[in-house]
Length: 218
View (cartoon, rainbow, N blue to C red):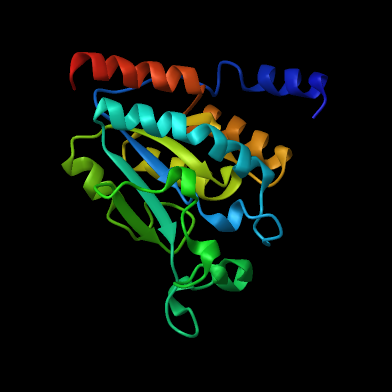
């Protein structure tokens, strides 16, 4: 998008969309689908933007762990010969059929592998909230803010941000820690999320907030 068009877009949205919600009292970090299918060169789902996001993600993950806030990961798994649990999505996007036990592409990327004591929630659709226990789990932990990282920006990140807002959570998407296969949908969806569904924030802002919690002993 040309700078002129970008300026027109920002001007058009100004004063209508884009209110900041900010952090609440208690955050959790949710890492969405950092799976090898998105980072292995040659894989159908390979996305250079996800590789870049994964390079940044350990820094955010370390800060969350040091602060003591809940860290939750998601993955995708389909079961059964016909992958009935994938519904229409695996018909629309048959590339997702790779997400089965035994396929290395369905495994977590090494730099962001969940720790032994961290919860992994398995999903079958784009949103980490749809058909899962995520909302109930976060509520039971007293969480009101979700710091979101993972992939892809235009798919599972956007869907999770929209649903998270609708469940009553403050959704904070860390720009450097989310990625897509092409910059255009990545930037368009970050703009949309920041305008309507959450706050798109920088890595330094996210880590500063987590460090502040750590210094308070929360």
